[in-house]
Length: 218
Length: 260
Image 1 (tube, chains in turn yellow, purple):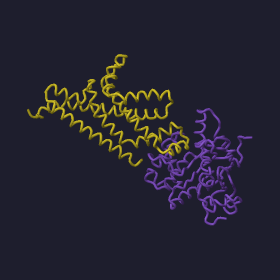
Image 2: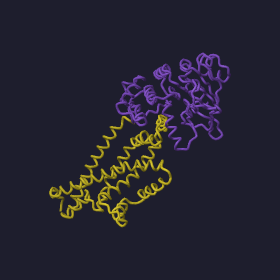
Image 3: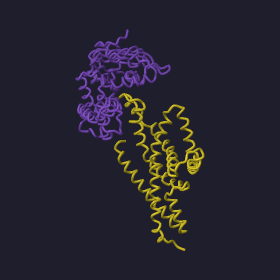
Image 4: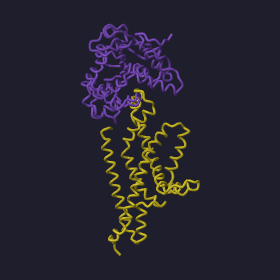
């Protein structure tokens, strides 16, 4: 039997809906990973030890274990201690924290490589260390690592397929459902792959726009 | 003893300043008074401690001994950590500083560089901050570049914006740490012109510099430092024309065209 793409139109609505969920979960998790990454980085570098160490543990857990396992823990595990999260929320938290840890590593290095004259100039004007970090050092550090953070965000998009296992009807699960009804895995997986690629292009476009906006101020 | 009334002569007081990194003594018991509106140049070979002294005045490099006073308030008061942070942030608002490498904030325009601290620390409204930025950038001749980023400016222009940024906090005292040393020779003059203008406006200034001609033209007093001590001080016509100490003469021979 050959490929038959004529069956696709009948399931396009499910697949497109899946696309929307993938975009939604990726966008929400990307935002969480970005701001979480900044928070983790500042904590890791400047918080007192009592706060820093619990963060180190979180960091270790999220870097050292499979994302799939983390999603299971958050979605199925937390129920046992009375935290029953909707699948979408569990997915956003899992993906978001996982990539926040990776972003944090990038941002920490970038913060340390901001010229120390920047902190001095800000302190000389009368800013506290916290104010200087917030207005002067961290914004520069984040600008410097926008390209590698962008790479992380593309990895996040691809790993968002994992949340299908906790029942979020994103693109991969939608494709599986269409396959379940038609027994045409090749066509629908190819279609899903094509849509991932398109979303990916969209993300790269957004990243380029952000880079262009900040290129002057570097 | 230390008093809170400010005489004309002791607007800025450095009393027995000492600084040591372990065994290495960088500042050895330095005292200096600067009157309101006075301009003092600190000259000396590199490693003489002149930048360290300047950076001690706003506590960027804290002293290990001695006191700094500005307008009747001790800058490096001994206070519990939290209170000290509040105190020093307050004091630093009154002490402008200009660095050799400008240290402009690269992610902000000239306008934002100037207005950031006043907005944040003095609660200026956007309108008031914009007016302030225009006023200060006008003063340093950078009004046409108000919305440029530092990467779009020359070194001399950056330094002028940095001076405007410091002036925007309305400081009582300005510190210049080799403000023209990193500039191409043809850009030095535009910065010197701005500093001269400040001198005419009676701004109190302490200037670490390698430019003897500028020091001679603008300053009321010159300090020659070497190896952590003030070797000689006096009015520029004395220090540059008739210095008493051999060390001063030796230094000037290297740095002046027609040295004494």
